[in-house]
Picture 1 (cartoon, rainbow, N blue to C red):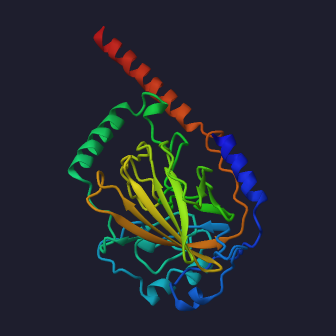
Picture 2 (spheres, one colour):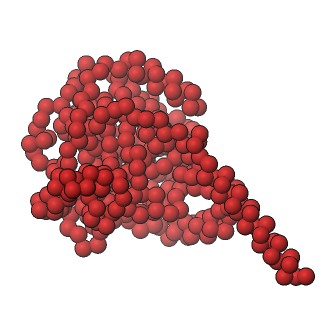
Picture 3 (cartoon, rainbow, N blue to C red):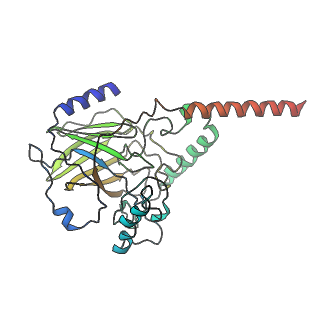
Length: 332
């Protein structure tokens, strides 16, 4: 499957007419002046979405309690250039309590979630909550049994950056977009996943996949992508988003609508709506102003460098052996 994806990527790159625009990412302030700047077009007249992009925002997925919908101008100024000059490795140390060395840009919104209006993920349905509680307890009891019981992130299968929806996590929140007249390719730095999205009326495939099956079309200057046919196995137990959010395992019936609009040469507005009626009590939506950046994307060799699972399981077997020996001595 990976070789097929790489082959398709190579074909797409051969067809790539290089009109991308890259540059130093600026903190988006949502102003009309930036949106009015002319953005490049592809040879067929559609907006050119190609290039390297990042969603490495300091804005959390969910709105912190007590925060308004938008940061004030003073709050934005307090979290941008002046702090970056003081500490280049951690320019936004106090934004919503987020710490760490990964520099992030600031959006005016105080949450990625735009709907519901409170900026929070809707509650789980009663059935989904019961299933999650059972799965979580099973995971707690059997986590060290073998690699199959560990999270999809630890197993290098899929992570929230891959999407859809594509959400930022602790690091490596970078993407490359390649565009032809009938396909769009989105390559994610982590876990180096590739989404190849046909831009035609072809029906969705019946094969359920980790990232679902995507189809796209243009609505004016907006690329709209609908994804269905998820395999329902992409689940997380623990805070895998950078600000501690714990996304619950979605259902096979989930569908995601994504919208990509190049509002400026250095800003790609990414909007999404998650509809998963067997998991959440209502749909939820979000938006991220992705920033242009210089490439290329460096390979994220997760499987090749993944020694954690081996060491975790070795440690678990050592603990079991020690417990058995201690129990045997106690019984003597």
